[in-house]
Length: 235
Image 1 (cartoon, rainbow, N blue to C red):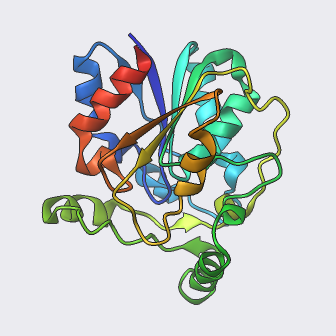
Image 2: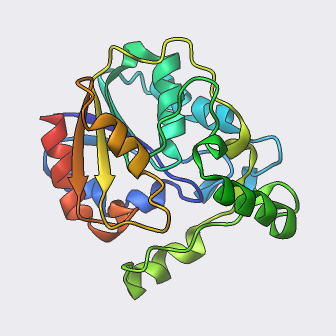
């Protein structure tokens, strides 16, 4: 049995893991899905002050108050930034790190640093033009998302405070001793943002690399396949 703690993606929240939770529990695992400040059911807490460290603190607080140890920490997309920070601050509570089509920063990097220049410019312009200078509008769902799922997720997405993308992550421990896995979603979106990490870790003995036939949010589009893969990694 593994204890999964999920660091969800941008614009998202705990609700986006609704399909996966019962599947992992049926396989004998525990799954905890915190929602980060300013998103999901915590959208009323949104403010300009929210940054990456805010979201790292959110997950650290769950680990602390629930006294969670031997955690399989999963970072999805933007959540890879959060998971990296959490593992750096509390490595003694983490059994393994699992990145799901996620950003994997080095010390001193922000999420915006890991995007191509044209994409960085596009996002910053969207914040200025549409987000009152501090909110980033969501990406459109992948084209293979069903109409039913679009109707489910679209009203629940919340615009993301841009500080979470702009703040560099400064690492002190880097969790280098932790077992690490990367799950690469092979139904590629524009620009193949996450291929850079799959290529880097494919021949790295410190990483396990897995692929899943899914677009960027398999927790929404192929929850059964994702649950099977997470179960496989945990065992």
